[in-house]
Image 1: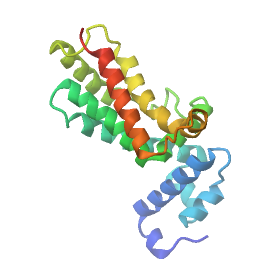
Image 2: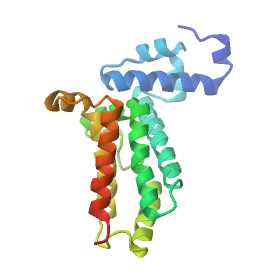
Image 3: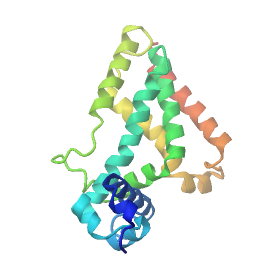
Image 4: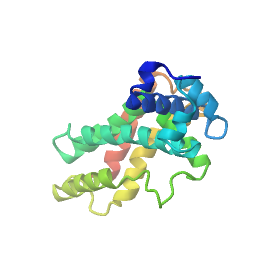
Length: 210
């Protein structure tokens, strides 16, 4: 399909259309089930634009991962600045994860597909995804909390961040299986609010200085 004149004259828009179409299809079907033809058909651009802007289908999938990962990183930094104390900052972070995962289901699905691929597109050589920038901020908040007497001094900060993400992620990644097995609708807003309150209680009871 030939691109429209407005698309062909706007390279940023063309690239964005391709990326959004790829995210939508890859999140729904995974890398192997999606063809380049399907992506360009949804984006309504010429097929050669995929290779012009991204080089390959693999590179387009990598760009999709970077895009959705950038979305969560932006809300992480914003969330921690909403709190005054270290405890408030980390509470806002947990709340932001729940909200983000509700608003951005494509993030959950793309990360699940990539983990099924054993992180094939996320090699150490290309450094596509890294938690280093936010991890440094998270570590600083934890250290601030330890110094203020709010948190225990023996916390493993890397594992703590894993638990922060995991406790929120599970409500979305395993929503349907858990809803069936527990007879609990994890898609219900009140149920998720109960889950968030429980996560907050568990986390801060666990990390608080005794």
